Length: 410
Ligand code: UTP
Image (tube, rainbow, N blue to C red; front, side, top):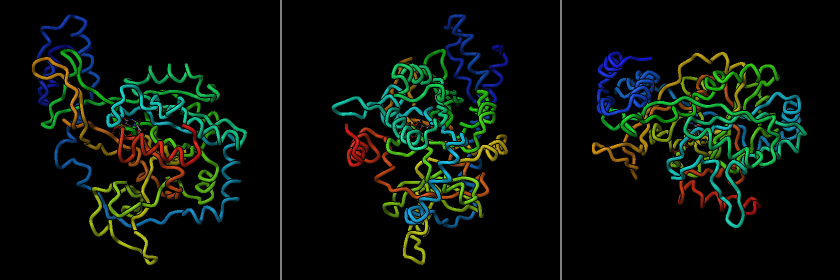
């Protein structure tokens, strides 16, 4: 256990002495709790606030990357479907649901997957995703192992909700949970927030740590023992996405490439989505804010946008490759978020606009660690209905429209 003196030394080094401001007022158990939080925090993450360490300062040379287009996929559908079905039936494909986020934009105080998108009936986000995966089970006759990543903040709610709902009909023998790591949140001047006099503000450290967390949970042994070779990683919020679908799996396997990423054609040059491209000759995702005007508007010989394929957070990775990059470091992104905190008067504040930074590693950066990646184009209105906000773009409202358009009763 960390001593008070040692804690003071650490905090001094990082300019965070204020975390002990109320130490003397706390009960013995609260004091212990606070010291153990300080002990667990990786303060070196704060170094990412320094300008020279910012990830965006060190990007390489970008070039466009062509995709397996909707047309290509249609033409090869039999071949892809056969290859994918074979792999799924042989138990070589698993799915990982990234559900550790806090969904602050949605403003729902439970795990995002527990949000009910139904109107006249109950239809939860988790239910939509499981229904989509069930389509594959029905089509192939094989259960796809489903690993669900939660965070310390939402694990208990998530697990009990899915159990209570009987996993919406999914075979629970094929469902496993694991918990991701946390990182401190800071105000805009780099001071770590407190949630109370004894609790430091920590939040999930981004979706990039999913594989290390899965390994730490001891699940890699199981994955290897089962002979799983491919993992389809996907976000909780896209209620229309196909998961571990034979066509996608088959297209990536048939391509001989090391990984795949589902993409949609950008609606217009300024759409705020990361684009799958090449960076220094390797697959990579360039964020919309990192693209120059020239990149955004560049056209190819067919007069199509050259940087056209936006990612939708649905990737297919090979287990072998994931293992080989296990110890490689992902860049840490400093993101602006709304962070609930305790103010100087000891009052708990829930801000309505971003008031500080969180530190996150992102799964999309794993794409740059791959030797190759197949951008796999999907029909936007069929497979892309993300729920990020209550209303407007990428919202509950827009997702409801799209669900209806796809014949799903609400
Ligand atoms: P988002 O980038 O939308 O973040 O996550 P978020 O935390 O859910 O939502 P906002 O930004 O606060 O509104 C994309 C996907 O990555 C998962 C989310 O659950 C979602 O499926 N995620 C995000 C994690 O699993 N862990 C994290 O630490 C962050």
